Length: 589
Image 1 (cartoon, one colour):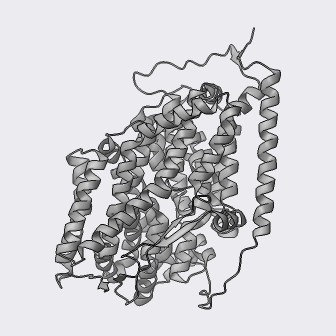
Image 2 (image 1 turned 30 degrees about the vertical axis):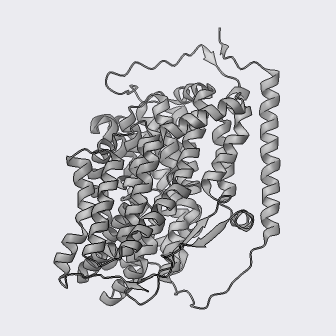
Image 3 (image 1 turned 90 degrees about the horizontal axis):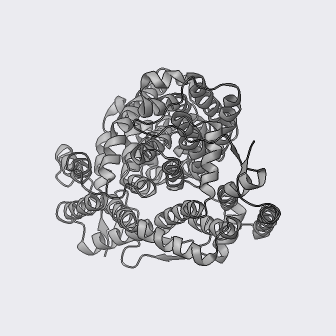
């Protein structure tokens, strides 16, 4: 028996929207006003959503339960799997003592908190977003900043806000690939359109981040460094998105801005070193120096992590790993049991890609680096168990949040809100980014938001005479500023930043910045639609004919062999250097 989604249960769109918005409004109230813990707010919001779905939208209880279970399962894998492995990697680095060397290295570049935030939260986080995505950048960079001595709230908050610039091109461009598949617009014009919107945000964001941390006056003190960071990132993001496509903008822009800022800081230093209020003065000891081998060993977890994640993002390697290690199944009782508004049945398939998941790439990196950083596997096992204990509440929160997201999507609650926005007529381009923002707030993923709303964005734009690539790209761009307040992202950042149980503080820290940036993108989109139409790329729609190409697995095996050789060479070099020299710091006379 099939159940058909209902979009306007009251036959009054205003009343339907008011009811549909209740679970989302509750989350805002619970975290901002009531200051609930993240998992409590998520679970109660899920109950509210389920009651509305069952009693207002007429969703069968069985389907509501299965929908929640499907979402919770997705929350556990691959999302929690990735977060656990990322935090485990950081904890290994701390346990081994290697993070002390990394802290010394960062202090040797600059002990100024403003500049450290630009290097790690903005540039390195963007690089990680381009390779891994799905929470890994925030988890790793927030943990690094806390390890460096940042206030945990600021560390987690600015990492969430910094993560806005790269999200659209995250995971080797997957969000834009999905938007293309759903809307029928080729990837390149969507990439170009997003690449003509987000660089504006990317130029502003470094100054915005430093202002949040230290205030406007202190941000002006390092304006040269801010401009180097923001302009280099924005230029490389614009160039790669417009001429190379959606796969590499984050990787290129992230690395480029790191190199540009580090080179610049060799020739320029701020007049004063800024630290947090009541924070001890910088403890950088100029009498201590580390050898190149010691530095290589200390950074080896992140070098191996980078290599693994880049490799896992290469399609031929993905094909091999999925061919060998993926189990997928139709969710019993839920698959094709819900009929959409257009009459199509909603497929509900769970893919357990246990080898190609990004979390598995980080697991392999962990196994490789354990002996390199001087730990035994027995010691690493104890670190892993303590990591699981550390993340028990974030895991519950993430599972609850994804269960909530699946219920509001499957029941039609999300579509009610989207339908109301789509009926705003000629003002729709202004509200198009709000759809993306809403989708990412609910699902925690720009990819999922694009899968949900790209077709609606396309059809609505056509109906009002606006080029659809403007609104489809706006869905992508609007989604990026919803990431910082998504309950899923908040849970990940809280876990990494040692703020478990204080998710409401983190939400209040980021929410106003999300709205400010969303309004900026709304006005940019409106201007692109009606005023600056010259920025819209010329393109042809994709053909409806689909060709099935069998993957060439031999190429993937070759790449895996190359990866193994490179890892062995790196590990051997580190072990040889370690055996030749003691790992104690050298005192400079």
